[in-house]
Length: 341
Image: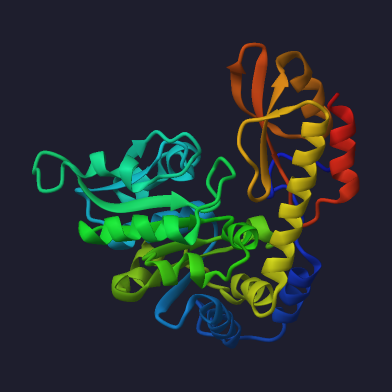
């Protein structure tokens, strides 16, 4: 214990204000499974950010949130269109296929982001009984390449989805970072632009555990609560998940934490460039992708605990990913930058 690194915003600790909320929630008895005042307040706090026309279901983790969201609206013959780099495709051990029972149709992208032009070929099978039928377009905001969807980009995808009877899902594990990057509210990149399903992250933004499934507008269904239960994502002591979301979203803690992480990534990117390091994506949130000489990676990973994204991404160079967190300090960043030349 005691090391500090850049491998993931999951490596960070729990924000002190969230810990205080957990301690405060640990007082007396309340009804279980979300029938408690803490959960009610947390839902109200989220609706103030996302709009009143939505349903909220807290889950234990991000994979669970994604599976619950997709399983709620999909049938076994449905497919989900997503980027090839999507978390649901690369980092969830086929949980969407097994638990949500959907086929993932992946689309190659240059920057981790889908566009209507990229999605349209995957819609050609609509109505063809021999093919899994597209039901959901799923994107991550922030994407797995650290890029951010603007409200216009999301609106274009939502319009395409709705034109063809599909739904738009956003994996928002880092949605707070996206909003901080764009300088907008959460509803401006969800409900206001036609997003139907949202997996709202908390853990990467300072929570100990917990995410939320949010379903908007016409996509709302009573099936949500039953799917959450069947997929083992219903917490009996719900107040301890909800208390963290109340702490994060009742004020501006979500924004302060995300904006700080983004600022540290910007500092890291600028320092890396000044040290002669080539970046492979323009940093937009709290992730930086860079090329490092292969023979330098191992020693730097040992000191700074980050991941290699692609080995041999360029002759003699590996692509690495650095992620900053709510608790990353200027000193943390400068130590890494000083070690790069």
